[in-house]
Length: 180
Image 1 (cartoon, rainbow, N blue to C red):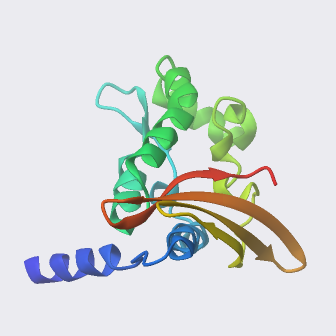
Image 2: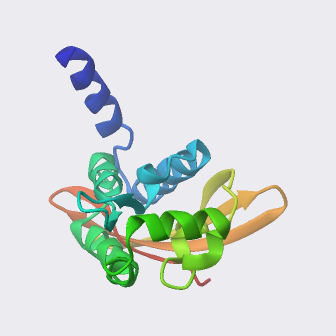
């Protein structure tokens, strides 16, 4: 059993080995596109779970663990993800899980304002998974780079600008700009 767990960990941790800045940018998005197609929410974003006292708890530990496992995401990016979840987390502090569960079953958009990631995949800015990604342009300096990516789904295209930095000998994402 331990051997199977070790093999599983090695498979996930070797999913992305960012040798170049473009590899780091693609690493995250290849993983993300695969994760959202799998539809397991806890794999790619925060989700609400029931706490021990019946409270609503915003849980993003599995998501952060997955980001760590990629090896292409800097701590600063993970901190920005925690900050992105903060208003939602603050909102749910006062809502019992039973109330959340009843409301979300009746209208998925009930919590769309404090928690937009409930109804939209954040890193593709859409309600549907996207199909592919390619590098359009790479501008590399000594220890930083900007990678322009194109996301595709059928005839639709979106661009992203991914900022990466060389950290302890590895290219890692520090920020993603969605408004291109």
